[in-house]
Amino acid sequence: MPSEQAQFFRENGWLRVEDVLTRQEADQARGELLLLAKQGAGNKDSHVKALASSDYQRMAQAVNEPARFSPFFRRLATSEKIGKLMRDVMGFPEIRLFRDLGLIKPPESEKGIATGVHQDQVFYPLDRGGVASLWLALVDLPSNSGTMRFVPGSNKWGPVGRFVLPGQDWIASHPEDKAKLTPPPALPAGSGTIHDGFTLHGADPNTWGQPRIAYTMAFFRSDALFTGMPSRWTDGLGLSVDMPLDHDLFPIVH
Image 1: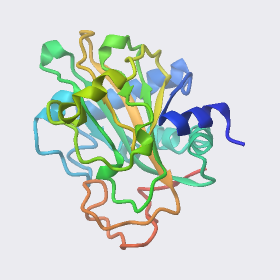
Image 2: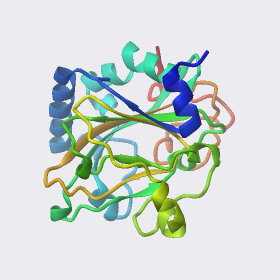
Image 3: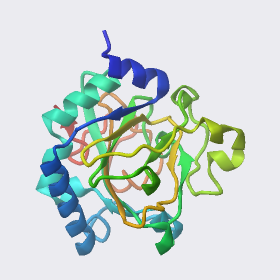
């Protein structure tokens, strides 16, 4: 029988989760992420290609694959605590880490912009559903800092297209759905949200006046197969089409 959390997630496509990290873990993760960002790790040394448009950096400065460069993030992303939470919510006995990402969203006063409402899974080269992302606040975030918002139930719509930039996103094409977006939550450090790979989600501009610092991990069911679709997360890794993503960058999370 699915837990109450898992039932809510499967019905609505998103879930709020409390105290995933302790205050000490969140503080350590924030310090480690800021150090990686300062060093340029996860960008210049990563196989992941940078996004072409400078608007993406205005949505959030991204640190790609912290778990690849930092033993701390590797332990965190593959920890028993995270694995148990995500397996329970997703409903699969075995999952893999697809990617992790540090996200530092600049304030609107520093030319920061909203994150357009989009789906994640349409950008992933996986042949089936069963993807979910855990998004964690690494500082205490007020509701006006650009925390995540969701269109409940959109996880059941299937792929709706590749949108992400504000003004070119799902809401720009479907303004009637703006009223469906959940309110942006205030999140204490270490708490966050989980959303399905097909759930439409985005974030308002950060009007808080300080950087919004968060860490996100995406997981997928381990029996998913690689489609061969071009993807900045998998290009150049030598994966075989119609085979599992059996690669060190996609570890099984126990």
